[in-house]
Image (tube, rainbow, N blue to C red):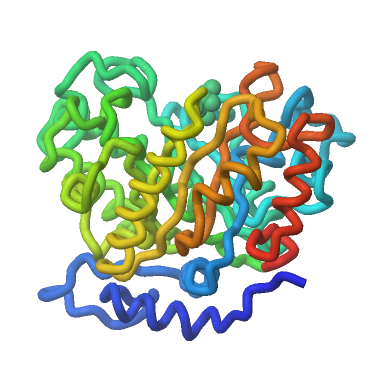
Length: 378
Ligand code: BMA
């Protein structure tokens, strides 16, 4: 029986003490500590849970969009037969320990995200995941506020500058942040508990494929963007968030990993994203390099390390879960590993498991491994 032997509150208190953060309602000295984060009790407990998992060398399994749709089914049509469905559950009988969702398009005031998932569905599934004891993380593939393009439109190097204070798109972007704050602050259980969310904005910035990427903005602009985002949420009273810093796999050492780190006072989790391609050895080496960097950085800064995104598109390897993923992580104390989505409308675009996939039996071995945690283990 796997379980987190857990003193969440003790762990969280230690962790928060080590990073200088304080839970909400703690009196703060505005003069000396203006950016002290306010976190709800539930968010503090979530941080404690992740810290405990990491310290015990357990590993939460994560999957993007797990209950929203899966390989060949769409849970967003309103069809009651799809309620509660999950490719992961269809294989192993349990939901992932952590589920990821994406907020992309929320900035436009529309009701569905960039992959067609209604925000009402995301809210509902986030609450369900929390009530079953699982964790929730959210990324944001935000459109380009200057050009009108999508998150991958890096054609204008002035985008980040344009949304910072004094920039031409500042007002517009404040509105966008307002929509994010309204949504994140609206995710609550029937008894009124705001569901804690590990928010992971401005991810993979060490690459240059998003408008907030390495060659598209300066270090100062990137950090200012993070701070503005964080401070906006705090000022809006959204205190159910934890914050994840999630570079790509480009960093080669501590210095390059931390080059655009926004600061200990506003980050809780340190991660990285990397995917396997045809070259397994290269993936193993990249994972090792990134894990070494992230685990050391997290220890130095009192943060929780994680593999914020990974996978092997289509998983064309029948023993990938225990033959590659688990050995790649080795004994690195990461709290979770999240694999990307199983698109319902793109037959080869899947990173998780589903019934009938050639790696199904191996996924069961991964599921039964004493180290891996799913929703029921929490
Ligand atoms: C990417 C792909 C896209 C998707 C985006 C946001 O990696 O999966 O199809 O739109 O993530 O979820």
